[in-house]
Image (cartoon, rainbow, N blue to C red):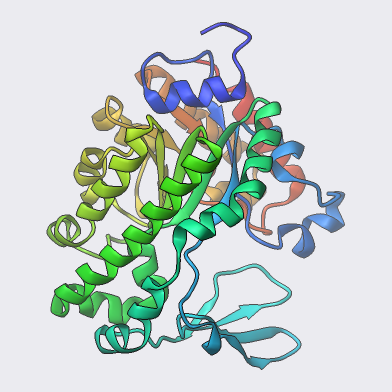
Length: 365
């Protein structure tokens, strides 16, 4: 690849695993409110993270299928520190106003019974193609702006497993995967068809992004939520449908999944996913070990242990970065360097800048 290769060229080459570019990719995610909670007092002006840190790829649009019951949505309770709200799926979450963190799950309304009675028909009545046409001009404008910067442009969304979790809640989801399989298949089919219609229409309207970055949090710290057998029966068919659309357009696909998802790697690779992200270190995953078995099938993004960044110990940061990049270089494995999830406010701005420079200094193949 020529020395004049753009950021877009480098990420594309890594995802397609055809010929390694001159260097590894550089990317990062950041927790919401990181500036308001911490970095604004450390000299950060609140500008765009992608531009500020000169990252290689950027999501220009996040799409979430709308809930079918907007009549249910609204604020349940609000204090100086928190707001409890119900969304258009009848799910109730508590969010913090002045600190970063995942929302607290309060309650959920969708079950096998209520899905059929209160939600399914209303959801199916929504015209996803019309929604795509309405949103298309804004997405196209962002795609064009970022491409002019030479960056690799993705579109992102949460898919069927993540929608099961966020709409049913973990308990109902896990029980349903075992006891209400017809309901789960029907739910997944309806949700999958909505995304397929949306993206088919969006592509027809504005053309293609450079790639897709979709989200399915398949695991927790110690294991996946579902067994490999359950995953293949209940989730994998809908991943195959999704990949058929994107691969029909020759789009590389990145899968984000939290937790330990290693038992699902065979199905993930078979589905057509090109890259896995984020490979949380605290689950026991090490990107170099994964690459020994999967470098011919997958690109890797992430796995730098954020706990080293949070420690403020720059020797620990440098050791973590150098050990992962050196291992991937020795294996000639495609790698996009980033943290093992995202950067929280507990990492200082100065330490993040130091870590980012270490990543750049050690990114050459």
